[in-house]
Structure formats: structure tokens, C-alpha cells
Image 1: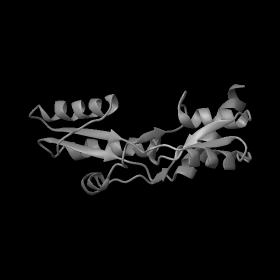
Image 2: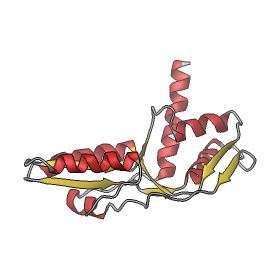
Image 3: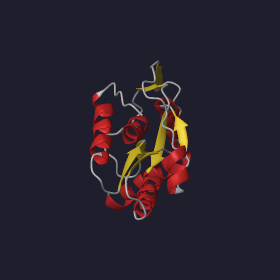
Image 4: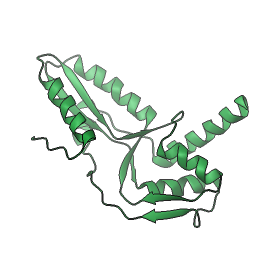
Length: 170
């Protein structure tokens, strides 16, 4: 497939693929969707949790994204490491989450988990989705892997573990 990136991030992904294919040895390139999980800082989900808990207003977009829980990302890496043991060339796989949602929807889910009324806190912003959702069918078929953590479960885990960390560490 011909690569036509339209931004710096896309260009870096294209360069990664070209680099991996330029050598004659087994390799796997994993293109991850939006990874989220406990311990993130200065990212959309932890920032949304803090803002909603503080009662701060925030905006959210309608562009849909695939949300990949960190545990699922690690399992994909394990599967890729097993896969490459029996291969002789480069393989590139998209690694997507089990759930698709817009940031606006994610912020609403966080509010529901925290029992915070978000109607007056969230302002939707219309956006254009510049990145079509990644197709992970090749990944599922060849690596025999698929994401299993629903977004709601991942968010609940993050909020529960964050609360435990605050209680333990003050």
C-alpha cells in the first residue's frame, strides 16, 4: 500500500514502516491505537477525571477513536513476540482497542462512574475525524489476538486503582 501521511504523526508511522521493511530480517511493527491505563499523566483520561472531580468545565469532541487498555496492548506485544519467532520478513499490524468512542463520550462515562452530573460540565465541540478507525482484522488473524477489555471496564479500573493509590499514599 502507498503511504500518504497528512501530518507529522502519520509521517513518523510511515517512516517506521519503511525502516522496518528496509532490512532483510524478521521484524514486527505494531501500530497502537490510543493506549490508556493506570499511571498516565497529562493525557485525556486522567485530565478528564481530575477536571470532573474538581467540577471544572471541559470540552469534548465527537470524533471516534479506538481506546486500547494497557493490558491488551501488552498481550499484543506478547503475541507479536511469539509470532516473529517463526517468520523471515517484516509484518505490520494495527493494534486496536475493544471499544470505540469519542472523547466526549469517554468524559461522560467517567462522570457516570464517579457519579458526577456532567450535563453542565461538558460542552461538545464539533470536529472532523481526520483518522479513519484502524482495521485490526489482520492482527487478529495472524497474531491470534484481540483486545478484550471494554472501555467502561478499563475506566473503572483506572478510577478504582487511582483511588487506592491516593488512600495508600495520601
